[in-house]
Image (cartoon, rainbow, N blue to C red; front, side):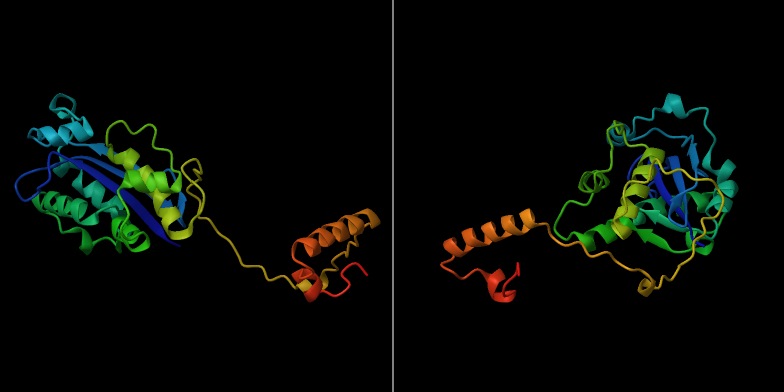
Length: 239
């Protein structure tokens, strides 16, 4: 059984080490590569203003965030939600750096101490499509993932889009965002089928079909000066 968490954050700026903070966390759970609906979405009061450029990206104002919880007050719940899961993140170094800083400020250990593998879909996309644009928007367009509702970057929406992109990157399966399943584990079995037990019907061509086929071959003979490959490979094909 495989539990994966597709994760995205929004932040006040680009540098956790210089005091920027997480303002939104969006997580989408996959179990056996299927959406479960057991997702996590939290806004945080960062206790500081967002940089102007960051605000243009996420649109989350200080007034909106003022009554939201501080990261430290819900950090333990986040740890338990993520525990033992494989994290799937686009440009993972950025989000992991911010999450580790928030965990440090909350007096908690870093991500790698309690989660499983951390998979970076940006690295995966660069390996699969070298030299091409591999932003989340570009990958959505490449795989036909609908992002028409993405006016601003939002952690929950971006995590949902990334879940769809990840499935396409790893298996090429069709869009799954509407494939919400229950929390029941998805089970399956490989069934071996003995094809020798099947009797396949043989359908013979009707007279008019044979005549039409011969007419086509005559036209090919004429166009190729009698060098029709089909006649050379299959002597007397309509006999």
